[in-house]
Structure formats: C-alpha cells, structure tokens
Image (cartoon, rainbow, N blue to C red):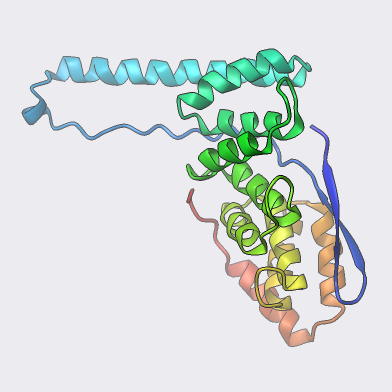
Length: 235
C-alpha cells in the first residue's frame, strides 16, 4: 500500500508528516459465551465439541484472511474484495479494516467514502488500532467526511494508546498545533517520543521541532510521561 501524505504547520515552521500505513497486524479477538453446564443441559463432551467447532471456525478465518491479504498484495483486488467482504460481514475486524481501505482507494470496487467510513468504524469499534487510525486520518484531513479535529483526536488517541506509532506521531502533531485539543507541547513531545522510540522517523522530526521551543523542565516532564506510559488494551 502506498503512503499517504499531507502537510501540517507549526507556529514556527512547516512540517511534513508522512502517514505511512502501519505494519500488518493480525489482531484477532475470539469472543465466546460463558456456558452454565448445569442450566444448559450440555454434557461435558458436547460442550468440548462445541468449543472445538468454534476453534475450527477461528482457524478457517485465519486462513481466509491470509488468502485475502495475499490476493490484495498481488494486485488481485476483485478477489481480495470478495474474501474481505465475506469475513467482514462475519465480524472480522482485520477484514473490515482492509475492506474500508479498498473502498477508500477504489481498489476492486468503486471509490466510496461512505462505505469506507462504515467498515473502518465497525473495525474501530472492536478496538482495531489500524482502523481507529484510519478514522482519525479521515476526520483530520476531511477526506470523505466533514473535517472534525475532535473526532480525529478521539480515534488517534485510541490507536495511540494501543501503541500504534503512526497514531502516536499524529496525536503529537495535533497537540503541537492545538488542533482538537488545547496546544500542549509537553503532551506533543510525549507522543512524539513514544512514536520515535518505535523507529517512526517523522516522530523524530516532530521532537526536534517541538523541543526547540520548550524549556528544559518541559522536556524533562515530557520524557517522564513517556517513560511512565503503558499501552492499553483494545478500546
């Protein structure tokens, strides 16, 4: 997938933030239901058989997503779309996110931002960090939706709190520019620092720009906050 780019501006100078697609993540959530064997009347054997069937479905879903990703990477967008769509309709967050991207880019299907937003949101609401990030990008840039920095902050933050470096970097830029949040260089440097620690290059540029206008005490506070930060589970 190609990187997206757009420009941001600090009060002091221009900074180009490159929105690279985050690394592929196979984020799977297996959600079952607690079963009271006494009330359900299920024998232990039948219950274990039920669990085995569900695990089998999960394994098939893994294989299906792998096949769809392979087709996408080979440029067979029509096949990838069909496979992602089938998995997405079953509630697979990874497939929902990929489907959103195909709609956003018009790959194998006519470009449709309404559908892109729909599928990104479904995945994001399951806690899928990449989908949360893409929602942030759409609201940040006004791509296919009315520009809304508050919504951009909301989704960038959810992804950033899970440790997604590109979202952390964008959240840092939002704090540095005061877009959707009060301008706060300490928070900006904290998030840039976290993203840079994962090797995200644009975050280092942000650190340099923001750091030039900060006091030693502010820099020390930002570093302390970054050091104490812990990733959160899916939200």
